[in-house]
Image (cartoon, rainbow, N blue to C red; front, side, top):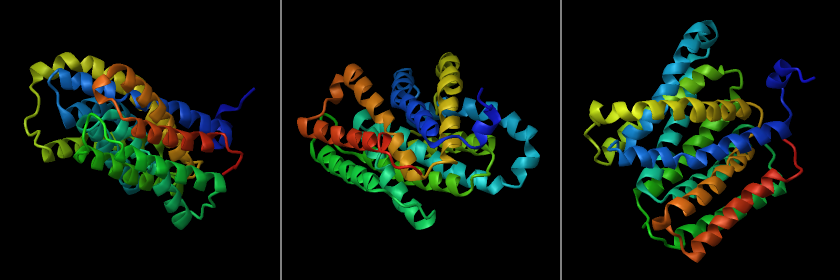
Length: 298
């Protein structure tokens, strides 16, 4: 019989990797509620906030209940929340302003940034499989951005690229400060995702907040998605990042790419990519599977 407390405190690398792979795959569907809310008249950053604030509100009482644990690590919780929140806000903004598939793939240069950070700051030793995966991923990126497509390159692509940098730094901080309580870092992540998304939306010219007449009908579904899908996936990924180096986490999270590519191809024919861009997508996904099935242990 599995000792749950012992598993949570020291899980095996294999099981932790599978958890990240599965939890991240749900993010590949993140674009669906965003586009739905946009269709309901809740644009850009306001839609992102509506999907993240319910989770922050629900976690807040737990943070208060465990305040003695959190007050000693308060600023680290805030730091992690700012970095990962800004990363997630830029990524989801990329989904809004650019092609879903391209924004997702650009975000997943994360393993390259994360591996470099892990080597410099955390003393990680990257295997040849990791370097091969990064090289293949970079080659795929080159094909992706040069392959054209129905949606031209725009600021949303820049958001998606920078999102990977901020997320990688945040992952490294979580690994380095692995005693930071999960509720605090997760709550601040959702809060700063919401705040950053609204600020990015203002930067893009979305100054007018949606009226309550528009928000209230969409609130139950948004809250349900936030609490049933987004909150558990973020919680599990943050927990797992305490035990794995950020470069490996970034590669495992590429399961999101597969889900996004398949779902967007089915439901968004207007975002069709060229053959060259599809070749780039295949290379980026291949990079993920090299890491998942490699025998190297971290």
